[in-house]
Amino acid sequence: MDPQVELGVRLGIPLALLVLAYFTGAAVERRHYASIRKCELRWRGLPAITLRTVPPSWKVTECTLITGSVVISVDYFKRFLAGLRAIVGGRVKVYESLLDRARREALMRLKQQAVEGGYHAIVNVRLETCRMANARNSESIAGLEVLAFGTGVKLLNAP
Amino acid sequence: MILSNIETVPGKQITRFFGVVSGSTVRAKHIGKDIMAGFKNIVGGELKAYTELIAEAREDAVGRMVREAESLGANAVVNIRFSTSSVAQGAAELFAYGTAVTVE
Image (tube, rainbow over all chains, first blue to last red; front, top):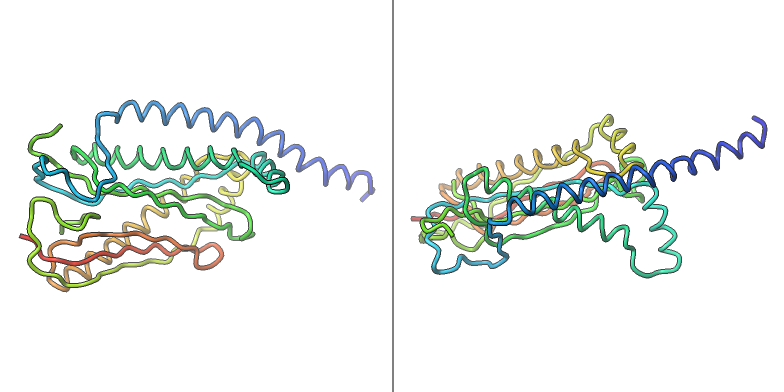
């Protein structure tokens, strides 16, 4: 291949991907935040607490384990930015928003499951984060998994 | 079977302890899903196939834990915890454990 063409391909493809990722990534994030806010508003009335015991005034009739999880990926452009940030150090804002989205989404799914099962509250809510390595390249992030779990309780005197 | 991730079953009394019960499953990703995830790694967003795969695997792990508790004669598992680890490239272990008890 002509060296000039080869150089063009080698630089052109990552550059095109960066531009594509910049627009799609921003759109995906905006849409996700909109849906998170909508869900948060809808499930606002359901108490989810991190206390390890049930408040003494609650009369529990039934309880079970409930979970909500999500696997989310960061886009190519943000990964590139994070790579640059790793050189100079400091806050990596692009990953902060990724984790924020994943945690809030997992919590919303937990609450949705509780509502669907007819539970009035969730106690001992715990959040766990796990990084999923990509099969082809274990260095790059394929996705982040956030699991939210807790004990859903049905109450006699529902708040 | 009553499951909870708090130390007791609210409103009930623990009468007997059977010790730790656990369930685990190791899952590998489907190559097709991996290709799709590769695409999602460019544009960003949720990897729905992985979310489903992991949720399903976790249910499996919980199911195994419950079966172990049943074989011991317990009717509840309390203080359930989860852990996930990437054991190898493209494979993840989902692990659930808790204390099997009898409640009344």
